[in-house]
Amino acid sequence: MANLMRRLAASSVVVLAFSPLAQAWDHVPDRDALKKYYNPLINVIAQASGSPTAYIRVGGFVSELEAALRAPTEKPVVVDYPKPVSANMLRVIAVAPPKGYESLPIPVCAEQNNKVLGTWQITSKGEVLPAPWAGSMVSATPTSSACKEFILAARSDINQRVAEAEAKKSGQTAGLSAAPVVANSNNGSLRPALQ
Image (cartoon, rainbow, N blue to C red):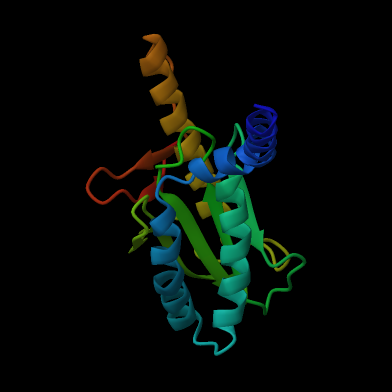
């Protein structure tokens, strides 16, 4: 009986010790999706940049993105890699969805030399799809991000989708139509809203 109690206590300690890790891992909608998007994302960004070192840069970005996806917060998180960055460096930026909405597409933007190289979205299935962008493709100033408008619009879109979902849960829908960006229902792309 004493051995049984010791084993039960030891098992409980192990389960409790690893439960936060297990809970964080469960927030990733499809564990295999993390493996699926890695190579396609590297390939599209490397192709867009034309740089042989893009593979290394995107690998670092993916590590940062996976960390954000494994520990979601209450609000969308902007993943910006590398930090610090200069204009001539390849920079990759994404918006990780908030806790409870991990199945939303993850918008990704790559830039170099103050120009947007491309915009994509990673689906919850791990597919990397183009995300057509009708906004600015160059930075406003030499020290600002060329992807800034895309990322701000993507974050606003995620916040709008979350607000609409929360309103549906609570039965409210009033006041949600004044979104700063509009999702194109045909292809899921983002475009600036008319002001």
